[in-house]
Image (cartoon, rainbow, N blue to C red; front, side, top):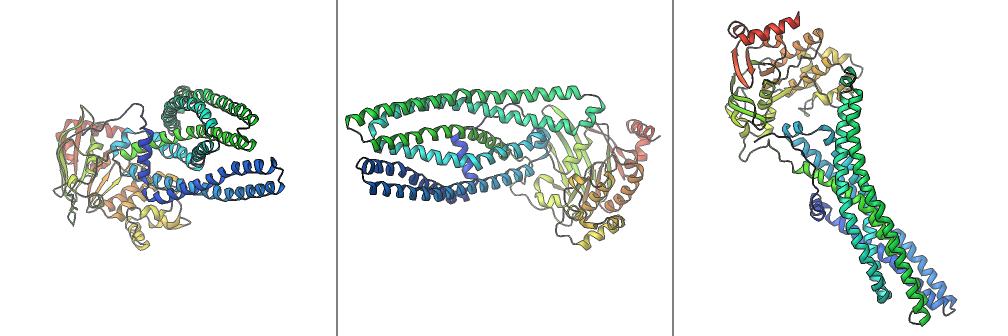
Length: 591
């Protein structure tokens, strides 16, 4: 198994197959969809009755000079308009409801799938592209569901209904019209191929634009610090230009297609008028029949034009749908195997890393035959230069990844044989930045244990010695932390993260140096809370500072993916030149 990045433009599935698959996403909407189709058919049939009523009014009323027939036709026509209004309103609401229900379920499905994917997926995927899937792509589907679907259904049924009506009114002129329509269908086929290719490209390029935009905004301080505004803007300009070119390809297809449709419409109506007029003069067609045929013919081409407009929305929606399915189809590398079992209770917290080899990319080993043992309750510090592989060990212990060979075990049980719930329940990760979710302090503290009571929360806060700080806040546990915890300092965020882990009561704590980004005063405060949290628990600390190594029961040094030193801090200072050199560097940094 290799965790590789993927590249290349994404290809959209065949529309028919894609739509069939899309229908299977929400099979529970089958009957509401059938009801929607039925309402649309009723609305279309009521509308198609109108020209036949006009024909009767002209032939039986105007031509015969029968005022009563004219008034009856007019009243009947008004009645059908009223019925058409209510039927159309019900049909449009039904289509919109089904579309919004579908998007509601699809959004939930995609988001749940994203959350279930392994860290390898997020490592090789740009966050801006993923955000675009849930924003720009969903917006395309939203636009089609709210506008395009209603228009597509009503106009498609109108085209079918009018085709039948034209044959019913006068099949000879209908054959002549259909000959022109065959030319239109051929032109439309060419347009569809061009438009599909263009909109596939548009969806791909907008993802790149959003990714580049997010990267520039997120890293704006670095950009300004190195006065790279010009280069960053140029890079965005190139990506933006690619998006412009993709949209212009779509615009070129549209610019020639719609004038052709309009031209063929004029030809068809003109031909029908000329042929019909001659037949009226010859007495082989009534004036009412000619008027009804022309009304139907006008209704025939306008829906085709509308469908061509809808096609743009449909292509955008299909491309968006295909991109969303790539996330749904992404295989979950880290998942419960068949026969997985719960980690036996009570969890001691003993960790074994046995002859592990691991790589993110093919032929680039990050860990090479690494073996470690951590006793229950032991505090192990993992040190090494940047890129040595120390953070990868923490990720393997948390089972964010699986090794290519070897195994990682808890209490002698291979992580890959354990159920996710039992494994996750036994461990907690505390990263460098104590990430907080929008909401209240209570929401964040009980995130891993939603059933915890306020008494449970205050007991943990008191044990950690931070209850006075929480009580000093105006709203206490109901204090809003704001987006990403922006209401609090980095140290305060880390304290909340530690309390959250403490409340979950894990047997194993994995820390990616929780104090490395803090000032000395805040670091002391966090370290006090950390010492309470780690008491009696197994901990693996990715150490970036000398103090973390000194406080550990044992230190392991990693270099180029191999363990090169293993012992207490004092032992390694005395026996390992590599570790001694690292300590000297840390000491100089503290001076």
